[in-house]
Image (cartoon, rainbow, N blue to C red; front, top):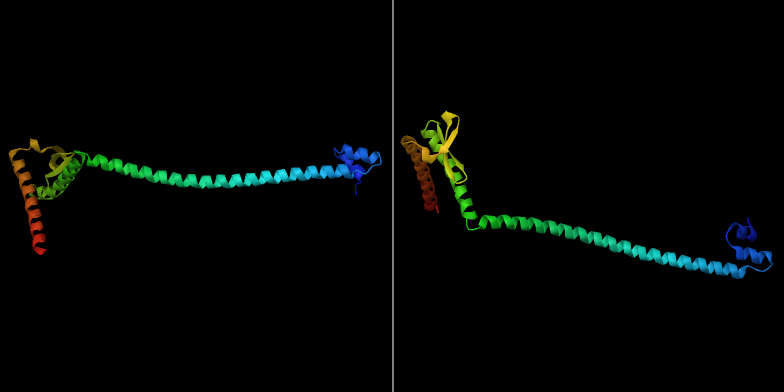
Length: 178
């Protein structure tokens, strides 16, 4: 085991070493060093406590930031939906949308009848808000209904009338059943 003199020499404890060499008790110097070490220990523990509190505060901030980010994403999605709806509901947007959907339904259902009465030659198509006729005997070439010949116009008109009568009879049956 090392003696006090050896410890004082091995460490920067010159005051303790001087007192030992002079034959005096180093108790005062050692108590002072102990008090200084205790003060440093208290200060370090206090800093650890402050750092631990700061870590908890940062962790809570991160959790709060994640929650805010999720809310922001929801708000962005809601804003995007609102913008889309606003675009649709503008004075012309919504009626145009309804008109386009109606034209597509009319073209789909009318095409079944037109294909039937034209022996699979003609069918209706829609491009935006324009009604077209596709000629399947001519590689599906499409053209405006405004360019149809008299006979073609008659077939197209007949197909749409049959579609209208069919729809009307379905609605009448529903009304009679209710």
